[in-house]
Length: 172
Image (spheres, rainbow, N blue to C red):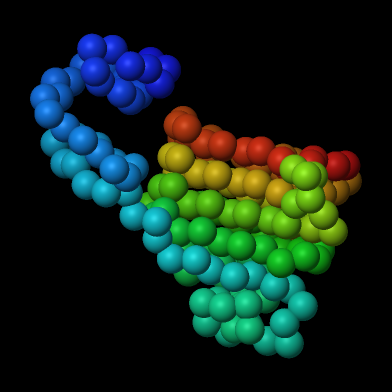
């Protein structure tokens, strides 16, 4: 992929071949196969382990209680925002191939996760498995407990392109 550049009056990034003439894009675009369209920003879902009971996940007041619920509700290009707390999920959380571009954002302070933790209650399970492209995971401390496997696993039968994992901690 070329870097952002200006060549002959053209700006942008590209990968592979293509021809563009008199094209101006004022937002992110998704080009896949022969289809072109604006990248959807998707819905925002809220997860807060400190709520009394799970709600619709659409606001902090009606947040889901577990990340598992948030991921189950999310579609491609949705964002899940996690509240502070230690989340011990009942099983491995899997991001399906149909959830391309999903973002899971935990609270950070200066790029360091704050009072946030995620683990699998089942010893030996991965905490999070990514089977989609363009996934972003940020601001989460992964507690890889004794006999645990991976904090994050890119699915065994999946290549996982353009996934971005940043500002996370992995502890054993």
